[in-house]
Length: 316
Ligand code: TMO
Image (cartoon, rainbow, N blue to C red):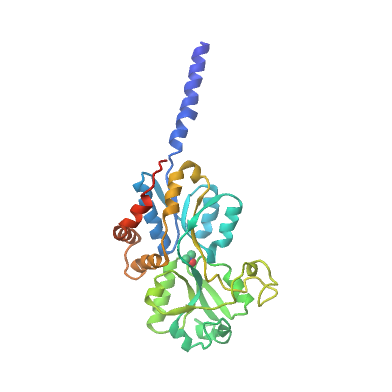
């Protein structure tokens, strides 16, 4: 009888605790997709390569604002594009709390900031210097407020309304909810040479199609965002631009390394340069390929590149 109880107990322990973890550890790797082109296409490329190595993957779509807590707690696992200009603060916070891994930088220099097509200089002499915006805010006005300019922002930026106030700009901020909406407005303005100033970044398709420039705000400094006394406005933070030579990196939830060290190694090996990023977005935003089609085209045209990424021995 005693033996029976023991063996039942053993069986129970085995079933509940012994066998389950074996399967539980083979969870799908969850890759975050956000709301701009290259991030989505690169996520699909990454997913295809992980599948090629035998992993199950899932794409989880969310805005960047919702991702930090989730990647820090392991609800989602991989983010292929973290941009310094808009996301450094959250990245540093998660690194300091030891909840994510830095899986390396892409070999690309990035910039994210206010941008305008070159013809706008006719309407606002003195650009790209930000001081010029003080004199010609009205040129960018839209709707019934004829004095205040309109700045069209993306869903990712730093507190731009703080920057507008800190620098004494007579501008309203309007944010789109998906990156694609910026390009609709840009195309419309471009067709009729209307003044426009909007959020843009590099690498991106825009530089392959249009001439234009970033506004030169006061030079970025980490202190600008935490120390009011720093910079042109001694009472305010955010009185500067974003970094001009920003990084672009990949991150993962810290637990992924323990569960799937080889998958982590593969993600470390995946990297694109600036012109590859621009090209991916050109295929989608100008040539109108779907994200999936762009990922497939890239894989087809760059087989030696990704074969090399896959060439390492490691098995999870
Ligand atoms: C993060 N982004 C490239 C859209 O600025």
